[in-house]
Image 1 (cartoon, helix red, strand yellow):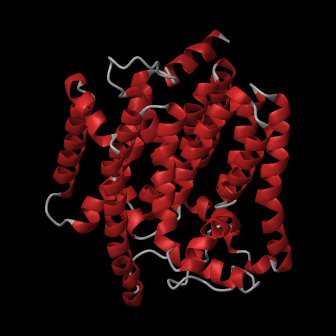
Image 2: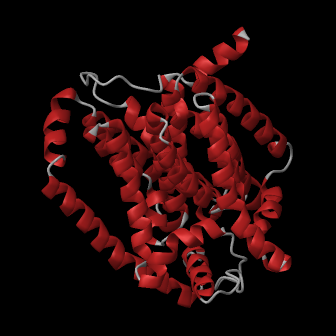
Length: 398
């Protein structure tokens, strides 16, 4: 028991949290340099990581933080930033989307749009493959979440809106505007995150949605409001069914809720699991051969070879045990607990793709995308650790 306590203390230490979060945020961005730069990509990547570190030091400087906080707290500045982001993405997305005419770019947005269009006509959302000829791994939950954006013709608003939701979640539920600023900088420093925003990847929505879930839940456990719990359960069910592997979100969060609210945990499990399973099961049983999201199960076996699968399972079980202990100790540890629980499998899948499928070719490292759903969560944890030292608010994960 004492050994588990020591391990738990290590995994919640400030140094480990910061190091692991920076690893998740920076490493997958290496693909950008190898894919788009022909001159010294390794050197450019190291320089990029150094610049991120320097700006981070700048942001947490006590003398600088107050004027920055005052400046970025102005409603006009916030509005201008959001409008600028919307204009930039609205300009770049059609360019990135147009690459499909050359059989280039990403087909993740294509799968969502196809799914919505078929569903709007009451047809099987998996009736067609993507323009690359790939089976669509997008789950029904993500198709439903993007439904109003696709139908209205503003697909990219779903991606941008989810990022804005995550930023406001950090600000509203932590009551720290400057922390939201640091969070915004950190997710913006991830080049792969920015790349997937431009191409309209639904993985951005998943990652941003997870940040909203953990902070909404942390705040909810203080009031234990049933109505708010049902809203959270519905949203969690949709996010969990966005990919077959994210169904694990429901039992994980149920365990975390159970440590503080047993009745709420049962209700959360029933509602979220119903939302995640029943609609998808209906589509699956109508045509099992055409239910494409299940192909991810076979795809993962290609990456998890030579003991990597067993290592991922072992580390995931260990992290879940540690996470449960953290949540029993303090409900504010939920963001860290979920990060620890999700990271082993996603990191192993990503590195397995890099090693076994791409032979360390970073330029073609598609598995780098597996980091993206936990990048916003990693950014949120770093922003908590990087609050200026003169800030009176006590940090929650340490």
